[in-house]
Length: 444
Image (cartoon, rainbow, N blue to C red; front, side, top):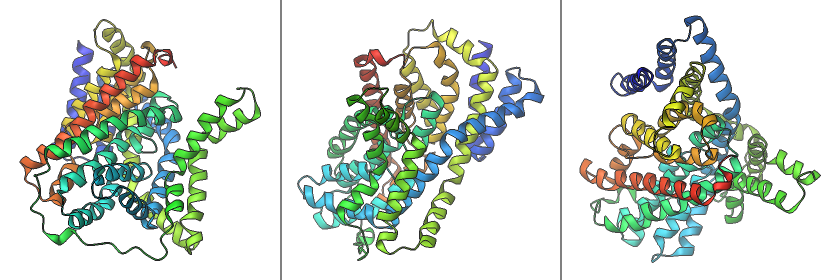
């Protein structure tokens, strides 16, 4: 019980540093890693080495993927490809099925774009459609934002899934495929279906946000936009599907394994996208580099937070806390995936950050993995689902939604918070269902 009390106090201290004292999460993780190391019996002289190893291991596995993913996302946004994709989808679906068009738009845009970038990008799309079709902002807004949230929680190359994949040594292609299976029903229920129950909320918006965006004559075509935005997904899919048709010892299988490596996938995607959305449309190399530099500046703090979370994870591993936790939970009648979801959801509610909640949970759960029989990809998704549970006043997304849609606090809880909670609950139900259906993969 002393161990669990110590871990509880460590998490509480982390929460208080971030929420009450407003200490940056990067600094908070480092401080708490030192405190946790001392409390768990690691010699003071060895704590620094543990922190450095934890940060180094974490950054080595995710730095390239996240940075290149940010560059591709920024290029997709600034080239006009994202707007081209959304316009095409809306034209295909029309007014009667605009909700489903928004779901698909959010999902496609959400794969390459980081959440905050995607949120700001789709707001003009949402309100231009509200003005054009004279329909409820909730009917248009929640479906596309549910898609963005689901992509953020479940799908690489978003920071949290990529980091969790590295922590649990999961296969990225498999995680992406299973993540899509979990995301689709979650989005349908939390987006189009749920939005119909609250369609009368938030209808008092004026026309301030309803400005139509002018598409540049240099915007890419629909086909080019789709190809560039979905390039990472396409390469990963091909690399994981082709080997099923050939011997595992064949040269093609080995080639696919190499091409399917996340680093190679992202490098190839960036090169191809730089041509399709950059030089092909008249952008110079210095212009492209400027776009990429801005993309990296926007995610520096995310990278630091992820790296420092690796420090806390390493401290917990070296202290032997994971082994003791595993022994304890072996005697509890609770599934490891459900346990991970509960931990992530609790930290999410307390901290407000999905990324911090996911990475903190990984630090607690990762040391137990060698003692439990669970699919690493499903563990990534279970934590991802928990990390978006019950967004409220300590989450920046809550306030973005409130201010853009001009809602009261009460109505923001009725709409945004319930939407995020539905994504989380349906997500963990899907994860548990997949765990039941795919028992043969539980040891992979």
